[in-house]
Image (tube, rainbow, N blue to C red; front, side, top):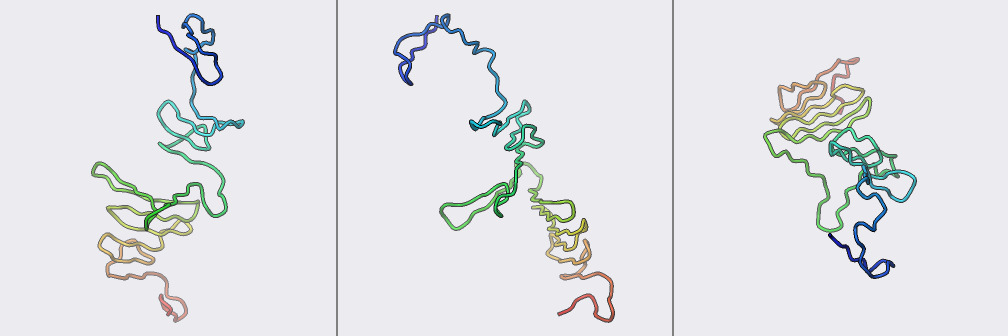
Length: 159
């Protein structure tokens, strides 16, 4: 018979035999980490998705909450060295991808592809893997390719 010896945390020293335990430890289950408040702070679901601020994570790591003092939902701060940042790497042949988006504007960056800046749901600036910059086009044919509508003899570019 296995025995557990308890001799700290205010429990009297002695030996407890498994048969003496009455709490049903075998029925314990948990899907989250409680912060001693009235809600679960971190959830890990059965498919190993982690939710912070949500009980139903939709991606591998899902962080939900309220924007705080221009700090966003996730803050990455280096305490030493010259740089602070986020590293996105793919162990296979795929590309890294950084993307943020609201209903009308977004920025996306592909490590093996292009950089795109969007507003009002439309890509406005496009930088190709070859370094060409397109304004008003996603297929720039020169180093800087500006496309659009000529307005009242002002042209497409005002300097």
